[in-house]
Length: 82
Image 1 (cartoon, rainbow, N blue to C red):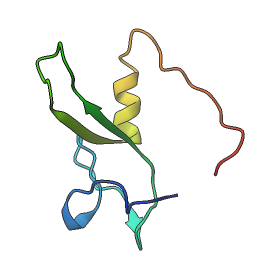
Image 2 (cartoon, helix red, strand yellow):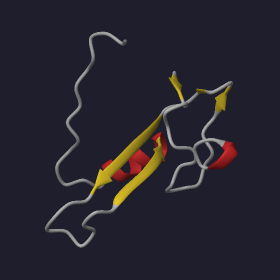
Image 3 (cartoon, helix red, strand yellow):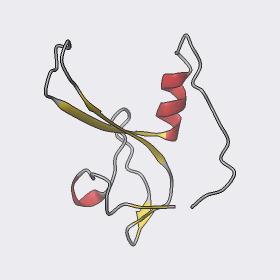
Image 4 (cartoon, rainbow, N blue to C red):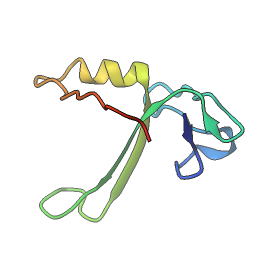
C-alpha cells in the first residue's frame, strides 16, 4: 500500500486515472489499489522543451496501453519490499 502524501492528487477526491477517469480507492491517506504514475520533464530537441507532464493510469488502463507495444515491457520480480 502506498501513502498518497507525496503523490499529486486530482483535487480533494484523491487520484484519478487520466485515461478512463476512474477514481482510485484510498482510505485515511492510504491508496488501496495501485496505479502507474509517470512524470516526464521534456528537454532539448523536443516540441515540449521545458514542459513537465504528469499522469496516472489505473492498472486496467496500463494493461491496455502496454498490450499495444511492439516491444514488450521488461518485467522483473523484486525479492523484497521495503
